[in-house]
Amino acid sequence: MIVVMVLGYVALLFVLVKVGVIKLNTFWKISPLLWGLLVFIVFFLPMQWGAPSGPCRYLQQVVKIVPNVNGEVAEVLVTPFQQVEAGDLLFTIDPTPFQGVVDNLKAQLELAEKRLEQSTQLMARQAGSQYEVQQFQSQVNALKGQLASAQWNLDSTKVEAPADGVVMGVTVRPGQRVSSAGSQSYMTLVVSAGGMAVSINQTYLRYLETGQPAEIVLKALPGQILNATVLRVAAMNPSGEIVSGTIATPPDATVQPFMVLLELEDKDLAARAGISSPNIRAGWRGGLAGTAAIYTGAAQPTHLIRKITLRMQAWKNYVIPG
Figure 1 (spheres, rainbow, N blue to C red):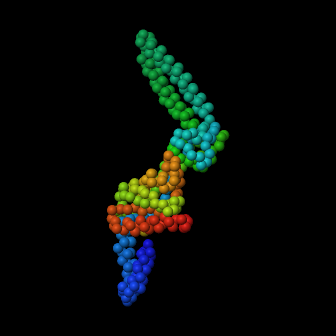
Figure 2 (figure 1 turned 90 degrees about the horizontal axis):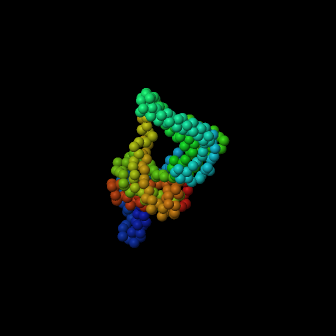
Figure 3 (figure 1 turned 30 degrees about the horizontal axis):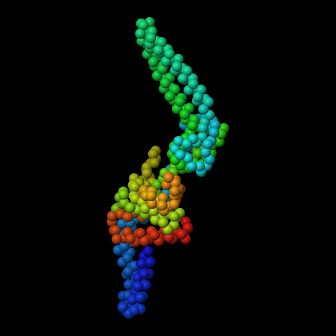
């Protein structure tokens, strides 16, 4: 952008010399350099913190699907890249052993409840003891707890989607034995709901606040500007992490940027991206990349230059890949 402004000044200077308004002396010969330096100091330096910009990316959460119980897979009801909604059945585990435990506990509970009722009646007629009533009551309570746990295990043989999203990495097959132990997942779910994050240098965070307007250009949407607002600034970056159970690494000279989350304006997003689905964000894919700019309350005259620069970037996306 500095080059464009300097070239514009040179063109204007050429015209003024040609029409005789000014004479080309030493001052006017070096004036383009002075103009470029002035533009850099007055506009481009303040713009870095008044309208900070950085690379952005659309992020989506990936959930590992691991069953709560061990067993043999009975049926797989989804395929890779299939869109699912929260609560949709992904796969089932053979419920036979779990159903057997539930039926057994139900039978024991039914008998214990009858014995409790009988012992209560006997105690009322002074033919039984309070100890027997308390003993059967305790047995009923214990069986109810065991039955609730067994029923939960039985219900867990139906593995459901925890959220709306797209199924990925389906590695489970009927007849395969799955386990709830360990970190192995049998499929993953890319959650539909996501967010746009922009990387901002620490030097330019000083005037950043939530609710400030932002603009985004994406490689996938050349020539288009998406409106957004600052949702929040990340509490820390990776360089500030102390890993549990290890000795803290001494700080070095590396200065990592902070991630700033942006809230996309859904109506604007739908219109510009041409997404007709009720779930606007379903048309978005994690990893969409581009550039974002945030307009703070500082150095407001420089915001215009940032807007022009961002629009130049949006049109460059038509011809410059990557």
